[in-house]
Image: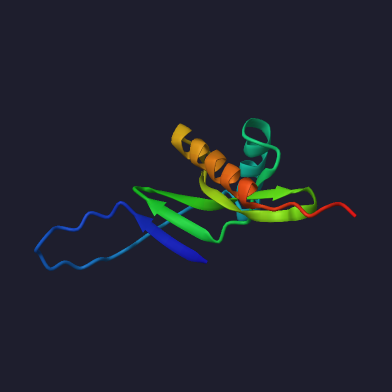
Length: 122
């Protein structure tokens, strides 16, 4: 599993020491985070999008999130590719959603679909 720490502000031109202490109450499992993302995507974005099991924890400010990959899948093609990532709070299960993030996921999905070449049905 990967741990990403975001929003660290280091003083310039000053030697510094970085100590990390992260405590998180993981009330939401990686599987549940995937489910929450999948439910949201299928209900509000597109039925060919779903979450995958996260393998990354993100510590940002004083919170910790599962970073859930968003997968585009389709019919016979199966899994087409990753089109984005949605952070899920590890204690509350709240999805970190922004209009720009949803627009980016949609745009990436459209690009992947346009590049995919369907095989003829035999």
